[in-house]
Image (cartoon, rainbow, N blue to C red; front, side):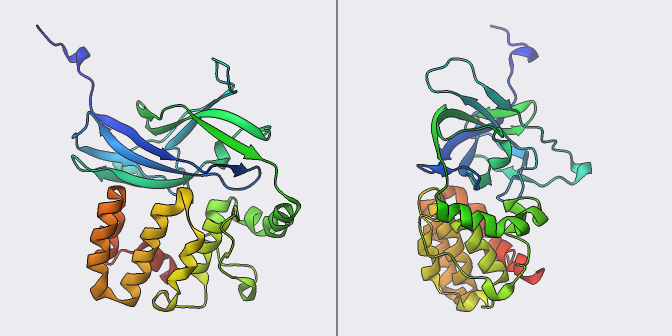
Length: 274
């Protein structure tokens, strides 16, 4: 049998895992954990777009359905361009490896999204190499009065930053009011914690690791990654063993552990540039 060039599909990314919260709150950040592999499995991919909790960089898209309906009512396709001359953030995925990324997708949601359930498919990549997740259920609810008040209090800072993703990197308007989150049900617990780790008064070597207990669910892998950041600052000798444990539990965090080991901790870098 002859195989023509048209029959050969070049390797590309695959979404091998997508983690979501049991419920999201309208008006608040919508964090999703994605694990990127390769298709076919074992392929090595040289340049993949690198979204982050602070910026999607066009690498993420979304398709939404109302439950029970066949046709989607909303779609936003990825628009990322991976070009070395543009210096767009990207990463290499070696053969056999996966990469875990946490992304914040609220900017992709339709403005008129109402409380309730929707079915969604997440899209990742740089066209024409775009991977799709399986179709899954997302639940949204209206904020409580306390959550509305919290959102209203932060609104000037968030609007000045442009988004919650950028807000967590910005210095607080009033440093004396900066405090770590304590409520595991706080829809802002992750950005509040990252903002505290970057701009708080303590050095990373004195931050109490118990602060990370507020994270769970979709943020569980990131809690281990942040614990490694704190341990590397507090006890470099113990970091190597812990990093191996993290890699075993969450292979998609291997690149994060390697970056810390190489002195390229993202949290430490952000603190040095605050």
